[in-house]
Image (cartoon, rainbow, N blue to C red; front, side, top):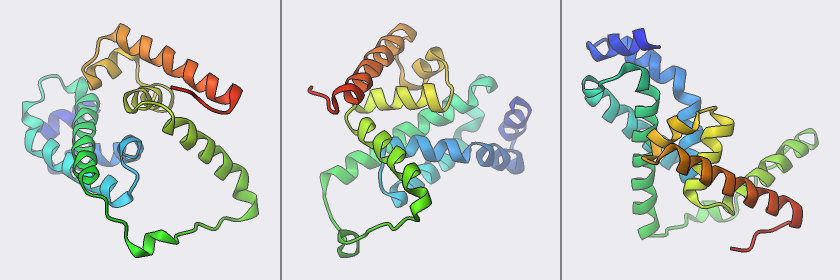
Length: 176
């Protein structure tokens, strides 16, 4: 990956495209932590790509490309979230949207609903830490770099979030 980053820093558009394609699934998952609407998620990813493309020459350490890119994405997602929360508009079409699933997928849907419910009970920063750590396999140090936190702070927040999750699973709810 570092070789592609170097090429991208030197203006190789194909190398930059390859980097983005290799990270597209992770970018989507991370943006989805903050944003629920797919259009907003794709807007955040697109803005991230544009910003990264225009600023990649400023990246000092190529091994931190992924961390740098995710930090940009989190900032873009937070900006879009703040802008959207200022005004609430519900489209008529969205009011009655029901997603039908096959019976064989019901267990998968239940797992996703459980996960989404649990995540909704966590603070935003805790959700980010849990997903980056357990799903994206970032270390506490890398998460700290992404979120501008000390490594020990990340560990503490992750431990507290795990306790909240355990509480939710044990008693079926969490009281803040």
